[in-house]
Length: 125
Image 1 (cartoon, rainbow, N blue to C red):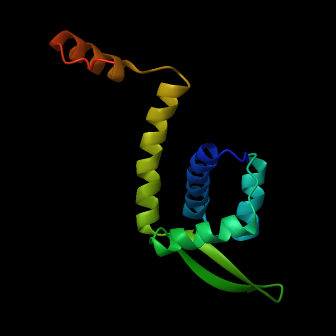
Image 2: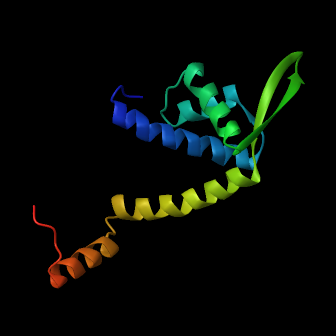
């Protein structure tokens, strides 16, 4: 990931959505999530990933369960009902954003702007 603060801020939101998406499908653990994020071009340390997982758990979007796998303790995370609701809301917002940013569909914004202009309420710059 880039060192630019605002870009890092945006990417952290994408990372949280990736985590919720995969945790809503099936229980996932940290190393799996890290590999998945690397696959999508994100580079993050355990010092970033685990606080994010803990924050999502504290907010009630994830729940964790510790299992022993090959003699080692591994913490699995699964999306809660609240996490799934947030993910579904985010999907709608993502769809709108993709349509606007990538497909240049900004009719609603242009309609609102035209109404302000026609009403004489266009802000003076």
